[in-house]
Length: 207
Image (cartoon, rainbow, N blue to C red):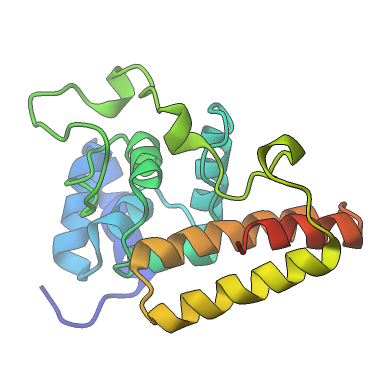
């Protein structure tokens, strides 16, 4: 395997040759991985001729079937293709989207079995995800769950929470992935949520 990944045009030639031979897309992905020096996750996308944004849109369309499924954008998918490990619930979604296993995508942490004896993902019923796993990290807190705080108290509590986080000084890849999802959600909500309620929601996720 070459140290420097090949250009997408190389994967395109391999994909077109594989299509002429009637080669299964899974085999094409492994061929691209071995020949072009890209990760398995990227190879599966290139084997289908998808751009990063097209793949992210497909993931989001698939996730729409499930309550509070994780969302992604092209930049986030690109990070995963370069080696960042997504959260287990996201790995499950990627496995279903690419009809593969976590091992087949070069990932770890799936909550589903990756046994080679299992049927392909497209032949299995969609995996049932637990309510806890699919509860969005950015879901607004209900007023009944906490004692109501004034706006100033919320800001002060958020500042203390951030100070404690900075004092720890370590951030795991999973935490970065979760932050990416939170930012994506906040960016979408910001378009149609008034400023004051939006600030209150964001403060609720900082402490």
